[in-house]
Length: 382
Image 1 (tube, rainbow, N blue to C red):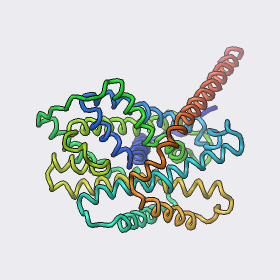
Image 2 (tube, rainbow, N blue to C red):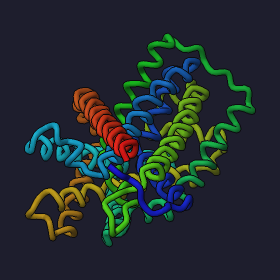
Image 3 (cartoon, one colour):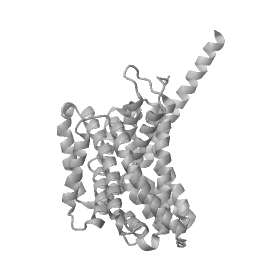
Image 4 (cartoon, one colour):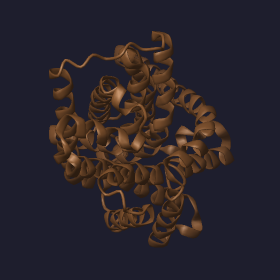
C-alpha cells in the first residue's frame, strides 16, 4: 500500500498540473460554459456551481481513483469482469477518441476559424488539424512533458489575453446581466447536466494513466501519492477558474450571443470586447486549445488500442493513421451532428462511471485504513 517514492520537485508538479489543465480544456470546455451563461443569465453563479460538480469534481474523482490504483485502468474496471473490463473502456475510448471528442475539437476550432476566414471549407481545416496532430503524436514521446512544457504556456497565455480582456471590458462597462427566466434550481440543473457533455470523467480515465505514470520511477511501482494528487488538483483548480469566467461572460453578453452557434460565441464576445483586431488572437487561441486536447486524446487512444488489441501491438503508426482518418471523416459531420450522436450515450454512461470511481476510492480507503491499523498494532506489540 505504500505510495512513497523519491522526492518530487515543485516544478514537476506544476508541469503535470498545467498539462492536466491543457489536456482537459478543449472543445466542449470552451463552448458549454458560455452557452450555460447565456441561458442562465442573472443566475449564472448557480450554473457555475452545477458545472463545478460534474465538470470539475467528478473528473477529479476519476483522476484520484486512477492514482489510488497506481494508474491501472484494468483495476478500475475489474468489477465488470474480464469481458466488461475490456469492452467498456473500449467504448469510452471511441467516444472520447476518433468517433467523438477529437473530431469535436476540430469542429469547435473550425467555428472560430470560420468567423475569421468564412470561405475556408471544413475539409481543408480538418485536414490541416489532422496533419498537426500526426506530427505531435508521431514520435510516441512523453505526452505530459510535451503538453506541459510546450502547448500549455501558449494556451494559457492566449486564453488569459482573450478571457481576461473580455472580463475586463464587461466589468468596466457596467454591463447589466439580464434577469434570468430560469429559477436558481433550474440554472443549477442546467450546469450540472451540461458538465456531462464535457466528457471529462471519461477523459480522466485515460489522462489519469498518463499523469500517474509521469510520476512513476523506473525502478519502482510505487508513486508519490501527494504530489500526484496535488498536480491533478492544480489542473482541476485552473479548470474551475476558467469555467466560472466563461459562464460569467456568457451571461454578461447573452443579448449579443444568444443567436449564435456554440463554437462562434467566444469569437463574438472577443470581437465585442477587444475589437476586430482580436480576430487573429481568438482564432489562434481556440485552435491551439482544441488541438492540445486533440493531441492528448489521440496519443492515449493509440496507446490504448496498441496495448489492448494484440494485432496492433507493434503497429503504432498504422493505428495512428487509422485514428486520424476516422477523426477526419467524423469531423465533417459538424459540431451539432457529433453532439446529437453522443448526448444519449452520455446520459446513461456518466452516472455509471461516477459510481465506479467512488467505489474504487472507497475500497482503496478501506484497505489503506486496515493496513495502517495493522502497522500500528505491530508497532505497539514491538
